[in-house]
Amino acid sequence: DDVPVIAFERGASTVGLAIQTDDGVLWRVVDRFGMPLYESTYDTRPVVAPAGDGWLLLADNQLIALHGDPGRTVQNRVIAQVDLQPRISAQMVGDRAGNTYLYLADFNRTLLSLDADGQERWRVQYPEPIQSPLPPLLAVDQGCLVYGLDADGRLTAFDAATGSIVAELGLYPGGSRTGRPGSRLLQVESNGELRFSGGFLSQVRIDTHALAADVLDACHLG
Image: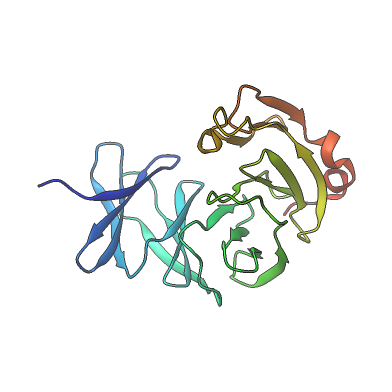
């Protein structure tokens, strides 16, 4: 029988699948050979993000970390109970220190950060977006800056320690016929560069020190 896969995500060494079932949404993690390592059913489709060799899941208001070496059964740990219900377009990323950044896509456009123990670090309102059903793309560096890229080509850099906005840039996303916001790109490179595209023609590489040198110079990790 055909499996009704409704979402597909690639991690560092595993793949995650969201499968619609009669009992809810099944989230399954498989290795590169397709062998299941973890699965659980949730009432609603989870928000997911790769995190090292594992995953972060926001499911039924619980933030869950999945960890495990390739070829072994994945273990899950509940990090926190999130007090707001995320919408289907919610986004999430995690940094190397174990901090999580959540855009909940709720009425207040909440952008929330939790530490590795599930304690709230900060909560801010994401800048007013254009009238688009698409949420911002999120990315984070090693733990100093968090980035959001909107469907209108606006890039916002946030201080990862406080949630304050430290820089904003705009890149033309194309017109009503030529723009492809679903093709946006937002990626932090290992050399400290940020690569992004609004989904139309241009792709930009920028040294992140040009955006927020003060924040990066003052950022102490670990």
